[in-house]
Length: 521
Image 1 (tube, rainbow, N blue to C red):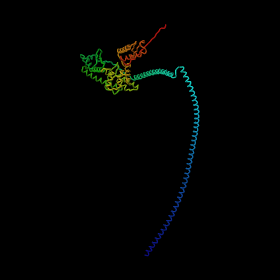
Image 2: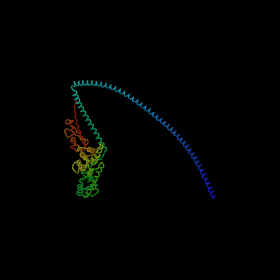
Image 3: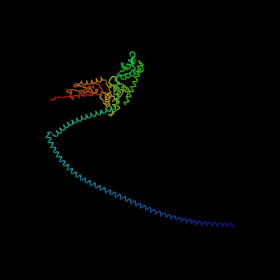
Image 4: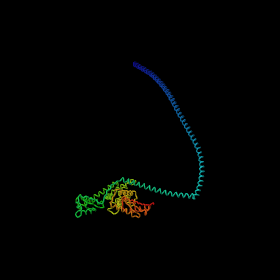
């Protein structure tokens, strides 16, 4: 027990010692930490003070730099402002000098104007004085002229105006005549140039045909076969074809005669087919005639279409196409009518192009102007009237109808197209080699022309020259005066137009000669 208490006491003492040692260590550690903390705080305060001092020094330095920069900027601004002020002051001074110079100049001008005005007033006064003097002299001269001439001023002015008016009337008449003559010459020259250009640009061939066709035979024995027993074959041929077959002494040939060219062509083809076939009898003749007629109809249509294509004309009635094809077999004075129509179409188109008018319309009217010649063997009437009626039925253009009607002068041409077709028709017909006529018809036509010219009173002789395109008439000077010649020429021209038929135009020239002779002794 005692030991336990001793042990307990020892243990308590030891524990107390340990507690005391711990308290002592704690106090020492606390002191040490306090010392360390105080040292750290002092170091931090020192560092803070150092940083504060550095910041204050840096701020002072920045402040000084900013102040220096501000001073520099203020100095620059002040310098720039002073420079601008100097420049503006200089400019103001220059403007002031300029204004002063202008004021001086204006003052000088004002002085000059005043001087000139004074001089002008002096001149005006002098001029007024001279004018009064001139008026006085003029009045005295007028008074003297009135006394000398016996006319007043009004009477003299009226007399002068009347004389001047007479002179001006004469001058005006002379000018008008000169202008008309010059215009006529220029228009003639221009017309010749246009026509020559059109003719040079158009060259068409012409084939001379007649009213007969010759069919060659392989031998003369074929003539008998064509005539047939008791002439039945030839009668059948003439009846069916409507032509005349001339079988004469011409060796190995038969002549087919007809004024209808289409019938003549059908008959020629029929004969050629019969000769090739060799079987000649009425039934075969009818068969071959029908076949030939169909071939000719086909050829007619193709020819018409080709003519339209060549002329550049479209939208044409089919019946007109057929008539154009028939013109291939029609001739006028030896000139193929289809070739003539194409040439008229080309020339009219070229003339229209030269004049700047409707080329297509001129070519269309020129191509259709002789369309009536394909009908004049079938219907009575002139080819002009027949062509107009047929084209009207086919609803052709009114200008084309008028051109057809006027191309031979039956009516007065009222459109430029009609005039161009009329001129182109005359050019095509009058070209050298375009048409021909036999010698008897030629001589008879010239004789009629000379007889007609000689039939007038006062005509001594007449001569038809240039193939009948001109007639020269010598008149009796004691019966026909110079003034009467123009009237007589007009009467003869009208008589020729009325009584004669001729291609183109005829020029009438009258010649009057007076001679006076005396013998000196």
